[in-house]
Length: 139
Image (cartoon, rainbow, N blue to C red; front, side):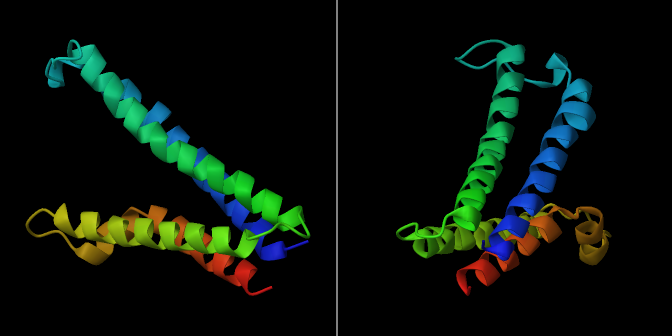
């Protein structure tokens, strides 16, 4: 068994749970149709729904990572497992970098980048996941 890959799957499970909870409990109920414009696809409710769909595209990334990490953790002889794990490693490192860049680009005048990044802690989960995947590829 590859313990780092198992720990990566556990970390990703925690992250996806927080990801879904954050949107479905904290964000979605507070979004009103009034703030969304109609588009060629439909009215404001359709535009609002597109936000939900895009949010959950990232949920699928988490779920795919969980499945891959569990398969790699318990599969002894999976061809190219480390190659695929390295692709996931690069993906999650890039996601972590994007979180830092978007956090910097969204700063309001007078805001502290460090305080914002400490409050928006999701980068710690993507960084931890990346480190665990890297550790798993070294086994």
